[in-house]
Picture 1: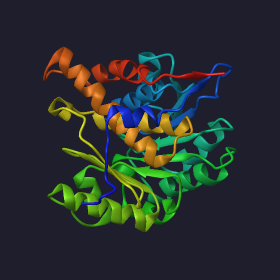
Picture 2: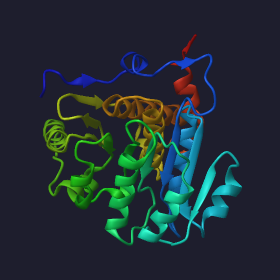
Picture 3: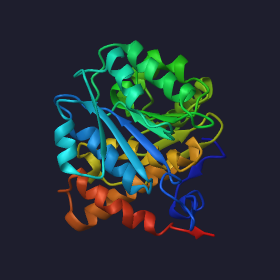
Picture 4: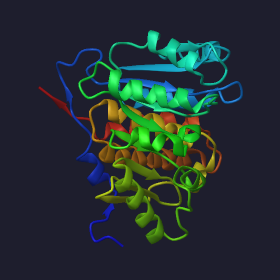
Length: 295
């Protein structure tokens, strides 16, 4: 095991969360884009969007197929829904999205519930966000679920990108098993993070996080979190923290901890009967302990 391995706890995370200026105006605390959803999986991008809002950002845009856009709009008026013309991600949908996006997108989470028709469309969207965005350094990117494919690795190399695979997605993304032991997982996550100069957050019985040089372990979660949607919440949280200006490695650590803590809080209230929305309600209570306001 690495002697520099970070064991994540509340004290460590408290040092990472940025303070908010007392003079902040709308937009100063982050603008997030969520791209996901399909005819079947309309809930995944919704959960990510709600989690991003609970992280404390100011604006959340959600791009989904127009067939499910009304459902998201009806669920919560806070979400800004951008309807895409195709049921799957195509170049036409990406071109339409480019025309609807605000001038500034601080971060984007892509892949939750998303059906991809053309890999080139996904690559085009990622490149547009990291290079063409009006933000000084482009958008930070979270890739999850269907966006975790080998074709994107050369596109994201060296970018402000966090990939969030579970063990099966790690194998699909990098071509081999993440490992059976904690030590194997630490070594393999660090290896791939260094090779592609990105941050890797491997979800599992413990979360392993690395930027290729440092490694962190998050043990804060509960077996109640096997319920579907907890990974979508993590992606939304992560996108929110990136939008607030956190570095990818730090944002990955904090989001894993906050996600797990929210799951524990929900479990303490409801036992092994939680829904992902119960966790979203707990995010604010977890993060409120770290709130700071500066002049």
